[in-house]
Image 1 (tube, helix red, strand yellow):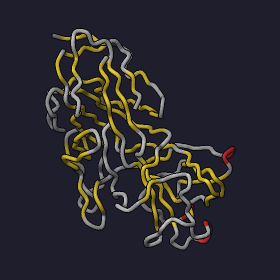
Image 2 (cartoon, rainbow, N blue to C red; image 1 turned 180 degrees about the vertical axis):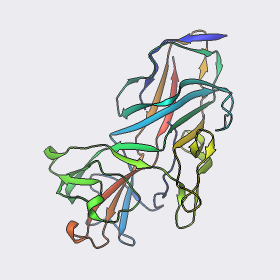
Image 3 (cartoon, rainbow, N blue to C red; image 1 turned 30 degrees about the vertical axis):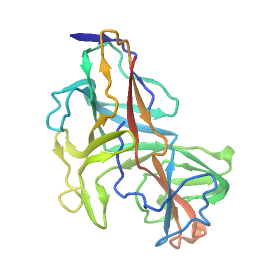
Image 4 (cartoon, one colour; image 1 turned 120 degrees about the vertical axis):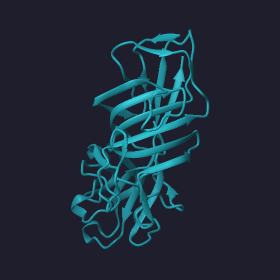
Length: 292
């Protein structure tokens, strides 16, 4: 039986995935007491983990609930909430609600143990970091607030001029979306891959793939690529959502907390006194569903 749901599907926080360079296993959690002058460096670099971005900007092509596990070549088990060749660009933030659809949708009654999505390989990140002591900005400035300044995010930076972090007084903070483009998963010093399978987070098991079109894996750097245009992912819920005759709405959530690392540079750039807040990187974001 088909069940009609109103258009009030609300995004409040999707798939957990790891960036091209994994966080160091001994990286400390970020706090406002983290200090670029005292953090432990290795090879001129340091990082802290489990920071939380303020907002993400993501281009959605597909978003679906699935009765069986789909693959990027077979999505026949899925009922789509978003399915379009033209991306729906959403800005997702803590406590921010977004109406996903303008019309009612129809979804069959039953259990949906899987969710899948297809998003663009470029994700925007906006954040302001607060420190207990003044920090040097990778690009410029000094102060207890540091923020993304609109320059692209990367895993390393060739010069101070391209670093995406500016620091200054709290009243001067002017965060902008800085884009991170995903081209591979893994550690470049070991091996790169377009896929991560059977990954485990606190609340789900997931697969994720980088694609060069909607159903073909991307080529890796140095092996025909990089040419990733999309991120395709599927996750299995620990608690399976169920649509019944009494279902009135579905709330879809993004968990952004503890999904970002902060990197520091001590590699001999005198313009930032050799110790500065270099950048940030997105490490994870998680999908939840609440059926009402």
